[in-house]
Image 1 (cartoon, rainbow, N blue to C red):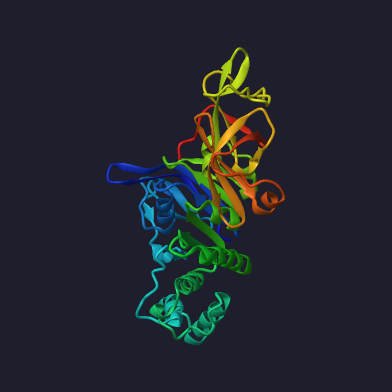
Image 2 (image 1 turned 45 degrees about the horizontal axis):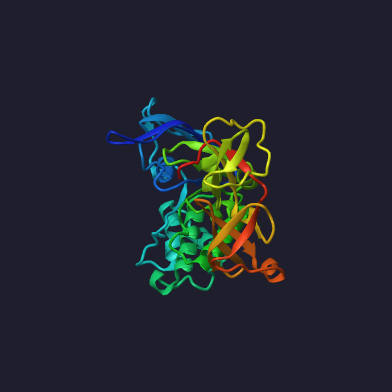
Length: 358
C-alpha cells in the first residue's frame, strides 16, 4: 500500500513559517488533489513528502513507514522514498532519448537490463508513446514530453506519484487530454497520486478527493469533488471552487433588500443564517436567469460569446454579476444586447456572513 500521512507538519524557510501544524491523510490507491491559490504552501507540502524539505516539527509516514520526523531526528533521503515525481517544467533530460529518460531510474536501481528494457517499453505503451522511444525531447511536443515525464515517474515508483502543476505549461486542448491520461494511468496501475494545482477544472476532473487550502496554508475542506462543489463549508471554498457571484443584502424595516437598490429580496433567509452584520447571497453564473419579467431589474453591461455559452456582465445596483446562458437555450429564447434592461431571477442560493478572500 502507499498511504501517506502528514501529522502536525511545520516547515520553515529561515524564520518564515510556510506551513504550520499541517495534518493530512491520503488513502492507498486514490488520486488526491491539493488545491489552493498561489502561493499557499501546497508545493512545500509536496516537497516535504519527497524529502526535499526538512521539517521544523511533525512527522511524515509513507506506506506506514516513518520517513521524516524532527522529534526523532529522522530524514530519509528523497531517492530512498520510492516516489515518482513530475514537475511543471517536465524536467526531462535533453541529452537523452525518450526511452533513455524512462530507462534511467531503472538503471539507477540496478534492475537487470533485460527486465529494465521490458519495463521501459511497457511504460512507453502505457503513456501512448511506443513509437517515440528514439526521439530526443526537442523532437517532441509539450504534451509528449509530459508523457515521458509521467512514464519516468511510473518506473520510479509502483506505489506513489507526486505531481506538481504538471499541466500548467500546456495549451488548453493538451491540458484537457493529459488530465484524463493521468487519471487513466492511475486506474490502470492502482497507484496513489498526490496532485498539486491551483486549477479547479483539473482538480474536479481527476480527483477522488480534494483538499482545499487557503492563502495561509490551512486546509478549509477535504472531500469528494461533487461534495465540495455542492456543499462548500464556507465562502472561501465556494468562491475558489468555481465561478461565483456575491451580492450584499441589507435589512430595512424587517425586510431584506439588495444593497444599493430599491428591490426587496424575494427569497426567505434560512433560519440558521445569522442576520446581524453583513449578509451575502452567493450563486453561480449558471444559477442566474435573465428574463423579460420579474420585479428585480438589471442592466446588461457586456455580452461575451464563449462558443457553447453566452456570458453576460450585468449591473444590479452597484453589483456587477456574471450570468451564463447555454447557447442552445439562448437560441430558443432571447439573446440580450448591451444596454438592455431585463429581469433577473436567482436559484440554488447560498448565504454567508462574509466574502472569502482568495
